[in-house]
Length: 114
Length: 113
Image 1 (cartoon, rainbow over the protein chains, first blue to last red):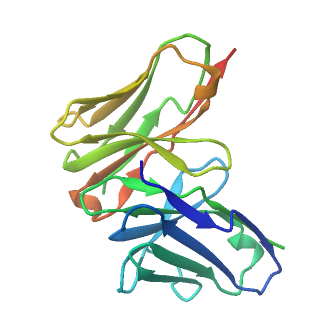
Image 2 (image 1 turned 90 degrees about the vertical axis):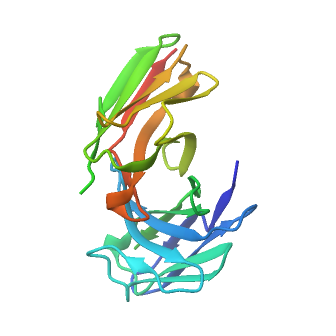
Image 3 (image 1 turned 180 degrees about the vertical axis):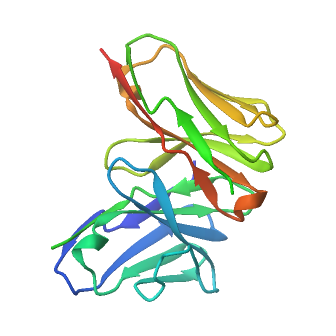
């Protein structure tokens, strides 16, 4: 099946710094990419949806200036957590989809903000 | 607003047992339904995708059914193995949710050797 990669898989940073997470579809071109956040023992919470070349659509309650999403190409989307704080510590998962097809998920990135 | 519920929240069975995981959704206007598996600290692995026009899909020991009119899906796992231990998530993609998948809370499965 289709493969989605994320980098890094794990990151630890100091409070106040910014962290960038990359999401790539390796063997297909994704018309839409999604960013999710997952807290321990909870299901995934959609943060934003992005289409290549256009601005991301953020879910209610998600600060777009805090979580910057760039979808520069059909195979790459990035999520930047700006001025990270301990409450931003979480598991971030991206997914990618071709129109009309299933969503394929990346392996996730564990962010820990000290 | 679409809501997805999974029952049970947790399940523990001995190895070799056949089992059924349940998923229900409130809005039957869906395009498709997916079952995923998530291992601890990992991303999601897509197991089966059922289009709204289909009744079931099979892959190996897994069989997923869909009854769109009643808003239900089941995931049947035959001859369970310890390696099947994981959280299983059901998600629907439909008219009322735009381009988003709506997830259930998951069923945490433990298969004991």
